[in-house]
Image: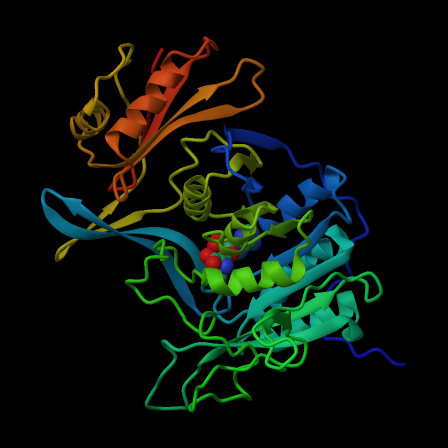
Length: 446
Ligand SMILES: C[S@@+](CC[C@H](N)C(=O)[O-])C[C@H]1O[C@@H](n2cnc3c(N)ncnc32)[C@H](O)[C@@H]1O
């Protein structure tokens, strides 16, 4: 057979040179909350470098599921939106999360993505599945690359995720779907667990059976079967602005869609990888189902959201950064846009030095202390967390979290702090925080 290949001016064959070594900087470890959740490893850095690091660690052929939801070529810049209260007034804070504005440079986009896709193929186990989520813009081109890398006959499904919200226009038909390309690494050893549906035959009535033929939309007159390859009221939804699942991270996908992928393609003893994880949706679905996940993203804002979701899920977390930089200087990724009612202020993250804090705080004083420290330096506090270096210098340990947008009870924070302050490690403690203007600060506590 004559292979059909995608080409563009300047396309280079993959370089056979070994990738330069990738160093890691540990940022924090958080023990599990004693649940049966999976373990999460978060890696902040560009996808190609994160993949090189995993290969360097000998993880080729070890991931049973790899999911990628890259930028779509949408010609937009995205920010994480948070509703906050400043001086009793509600306001919206937008933290720049990632850019998807390459000026229509399709060749540049493919050149950036191809090495990542090739590394994903190497990282997949023989029973592994690969899902790539895109839309009509870049999808057809990337599919040709995937056919080249995986083999065209390894494409198991082009899944159409048809959704309800958005995409309408007066100038064209509505745009109401994304696509997911679903490939198997090895057709003979591939692992797949078909979704279940209620059996209707008189023998099995009411019992679950494998839905191998099709997934029917229950009782929907308006169902459009051709557009709804996965017709299911759960995954059909997009997240409305008020959906409780929303983290404020742009382009966040629904947990139900991610759960369907995990259930079908991640064996209970398997681990998954997402190198462009954003708010971490697919990894969070894996953790909630007791599977292990490795999530990467180059945006610290993304990994901060994923970290928060994993904390809420009670998972064990390890956060590392490739190509180490000072963790605090690294927080400021870009100017931060703060919208207060009609005002628009530009601010940059800076490091504020807080006074040493040696005494334990009483009940309810943690927030007040942090707020005072921040506001006396001209910053409104948005969130903060405490970390300690462990004795073996293998990492930093997260001690307590405080999130101005979704605060935990003061009592809970106090208890964690008392525990940490009373711990035997004798290691120095730090507070690290960031304010509503996105400014970061830190303070050594002991
Ligand atoms: C469409 S979003 C992913 C959204 C995610 N599925 C969710 O549910 O939140 C794409 C993500 O890719 C990340 N990204 C873009 N280019 C990257 C690169 N070269 N390396 C690592 N991450 C990248 C962006 O920071 C962004 O978080």
